[in-house]
Image 1: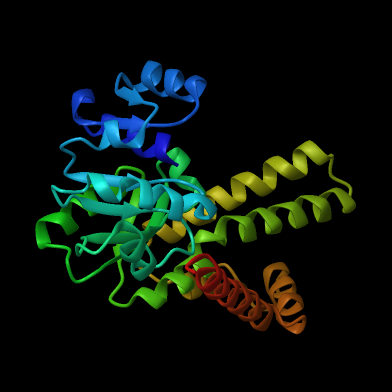
Image 2: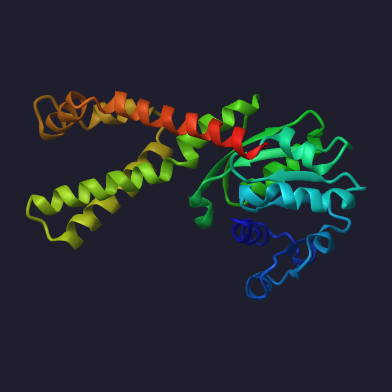
Length: 261
């Protein structure tokens, strides 16, 4: 995700010398430096020097150690942007030391790798309007950035978009298998499914009406589409989706509690 953000910022015209990165792995440092032309460092503190914005893109399990290591190097009071799942602003503040820190917590998703992601962002009370703009520019480099008024809504964002790509992949799997069962070659079934998913997503994104109306427009009475929709609904499709997202949101809240200790 960090490499995607760097690539997105460079594509936006941000100068290479305005971006620094750190990573303990020499191979990863060399790769990022070669691809994006930026300076890389083995130590976090070296990359942190004079930074206006610090992006914490590490596994949640190591975030506490990373923050405690950085605490002594935050004299300038940079904006802290965390993209680690399940780590609250309060936990980050506690680990970063007694001085109040401007923290933005965000939840991007994997299409950010293609700069087609969407992120939910929450800013704590120390974040200024200018810093909010900086965070939005950062996450907009890999897709859409949407602000949240309450931090607990990060769990809902995780359920809808953070985990969301996997739901669509599951539907693609199921439709491909069903097409194959109906007699199509697997490759043909896969191509039909993928292009249909892409086309439907573009129609929904570019249309001036909601998805429900688009569905109604392609569902002729007593036609093939209506037969399929009725079968979905008879199986409790909407209720199953609600249960699935509730489960994801609940698990997100549980992980936040566990990881923030």
